[in-house]
Image: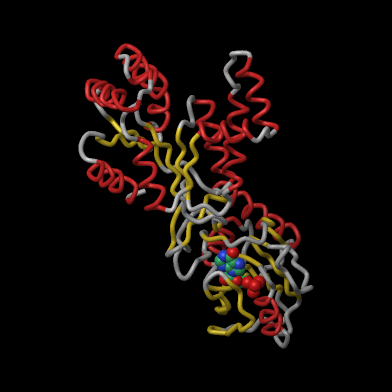
Length: 371
Ligand code: IMP
Ligand code: MG
């Protein structure tokens, strides 16, 4: 199951079809056990309960009657006190056991209206059964006789429940994402591909936070943070910094930018362990890596570019052709695994890195605008 968008909002998978099926089965059996041979009247509260009622009565192991009433109480994602009765009762319920079937009980406002409706119906008993219940939101004290699944006080859609009309048809349940859409890019490019330049444009255009692993390391070491000091202790011995230290540093950097619209990761992840850790960091933010974007430039062009740069920059590693070729080789060795990792999720985008800076920026924009 994937994240879905309804109108302007994103929802993430929350309760699967199988879990729903189990919960409905449980509800039906509990009610049946309690009612013995009595023939109950199940009353669904429309619209939300149509799917539940349909599944519930199919699972109900004994004879029963089914009808609906229609109330309206919801606008968008907030409950309103004002509940209207649109279709009322049409049948005599004197002496009957009535079981209300609700899709969800949130504040309990709807229940007040339900109880009012049945006040003068002389029913034998009025039982309340709900598939979903938000205990943190419930403000009334009517007894809930049967509860399928207790859920946190977050807006959900699917299995009859809607967000402004959409989502009722979904066979599974989705939860509103607390973080709305983020663009998180893993940016790659061989030395000389112009990654730094393009990162700056992307950062401006999409209002993203650029996290350069090199900068993060230097910052932590310079400021002697606990992680910086730890990282340095490995570097001083000539050892590689363990993945977990790098991951923790990057995670802290993501946390420091809690409200960001997205990130450009530059120099991270470097291997599959780090890529998986990044997925976890993003999942915890209700988000995900949107794409690995790699600038693609032929080796010969890179070598020429770097040699040119070496003439003016004086950088030693830019003036020796064999060093340059080796850096390019190292880059491809490192990125091959990550390219496969992201390609397997349809998240790898190679962008032609030859041409003017503006042309390359345009190509990147084309990719990113579709994410
Ligand atoms: P209550 O009156 O606040 O208990 O809310 C009951 C009604 O609000 C339900 O029948 C739904 O129509 C709607 N509702 C409450 N919570 C949700 C939700 O998370 N998603 C969609 N509709 C909801
Ligand atoms: Mg309802």
